Image 1 (cartoon, rainbow over the protein chains, first blue to last red):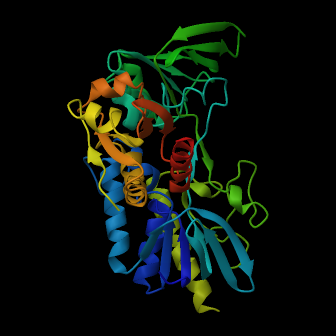
Image 2: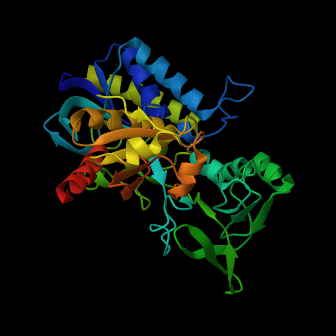
Image 3: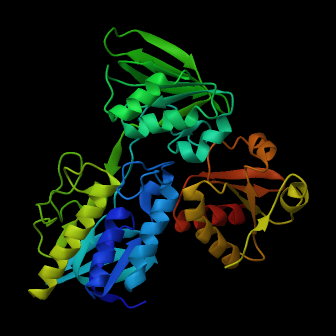
Amino acid sequence: MDKNHQLIIVGGGPAGLSAGLYASRSKLDTLLIERAILGGQILNAEMVENYPGFPQGISGSELGALIAQQATKYGLLTIVAEVQGIEIRGGEKIVSTSEGEYRAKAVIIAGGSEHSKLGVPGEEEFTGKGVSYCAMCDGAFFRDQIVAVVGGGNVALNDALFLTRFASRVIVIHRRDQLRATRILQDRAFANPKIEFFWDTVVESITGDKLVKEIRLRNVKTGKGSSLEVSGVFVAVGLRPNTGYLKGLLTLDAGGFISVNGQMETGVPGVFAAGDIRAGSIRQVVSAAGDGATAAIAAERFLSSM
Amino acid sequence: MAEPLKVDDKNFKEVVLEAKMPVLVDFWAPWCAPCRAIAPAVEELAGEYAGRVGFAKLNVDENTKLATEYGVRSIPTLLIFKDGKPLTQIVGLRPKAELKKQLDVVLGKG
C-alpha cells in the first residue's frame, strides 16, 4: 500500500464513506483508514427508518454494507488500522497508525464516537457478564429474563423495543422525567406492555455473582435508594467522540467534539472533520453523509488551491 | 490466515477441552456486527500462531448450552482455554495487538 496520498479519511462510517465516495469520484487519490469494519456504528442498528430512499426501512447492517459498497466503487483505497496520532509538518499531514505512517496533503477526520460508560462500580467487572453496550448483539442471551436499559435517547428506546422480543420485562432507567428520544419511538415504547419506565433515576452500582443479579438505584429527586433484580443491563447513555489523540492539534469543545465551520474546516488548513465526531452534529446517518460530502468538496477545493 | 475450526456441542470436548495446546474460542453469531469485525483479526492470528494455539469458533445461536455454561452474555467473546479450563476472557471488539498480548501471556505461562 502506497504511503503517500492526496487525501486521508479517518473512519469508515457513513461520514467517512460519503467523503470517500465524493473524493474518489473527483479523482482524488484517497486512502480511508478504518479501525474495525466499513459501515461504522450503524451496523449495530436493527432498523433505520429515517434515511431517505428506504420507505420500508432498512437494517443497519445492510445500509452500512451498501454505503461501503458504493463508496469503494470508484477507486477509494481502504485499510484496517487504528489511527494513533496526526502530526503536521509543513503542508504535510502525517497520520500514524497501528500499521505504520501514512502521509497526505489533506485529512478528513470522521472517526465517529463510541458509547459512554456509566462509570459505576460493577460496570467494568460485569461487562460481558450481563452488562452490554450492544442490544442487537446480546439481546438473545436474555430470553424470558428481566433487563434494564439505561438512558433516554433514541438508542435507549430502540434497544428497549428490540429487547422486548426476548426479555420478559424491560425497565428503562432514565435520570430525567422526560425522554430525549424522537416522539415516534416514545409512542411505541409507551404502548409496549413489556416496557416500564423508572424516571428521575440513576444507577449507583451493579452487583452479582458470576453474572449480573442486581442493580442499585437512586431517585435523584427524592434521594431514595432502591434495588432491582435484573440479569442484563444495557447501557445507552450517549456517545463520546474518538478524539483523544487530537488534543493539542485541533480545537475541541468541552465534550471532546471537534469544532468546525460550515465547510467542515477545523481551523487547521487542510484538516476537516465530519459526522458524529464534530461539534453540533445531530448524529444521524443522513447528517453524517451530508457532512462527508461537504468535507470532501472542501478538501478538493483546498487541494486544488495549493 | 487460517479458518478457525467450527465447534459445537458434539466436538467441543475433543477440539477444545482435550486439546494439548491452548485453544482460543470465538463466541459469535451471524447477526452481530462487531463479531464480523473481529473475525479477520482472529483468522490472521490463527495463521500466525499455527502449531502453538488452536483456533475455534462457536455460533452461540446454535449452541446456546455451551455459551450459557461458560457465562457468555455478550458477543463477540473470546475465551482462551488451557488444559480444559477457560483461562482468559476477552469481551467485545478489541484490537489485534491486545489479542496477541493475551495469547502470549497464555503461552508464556506454559
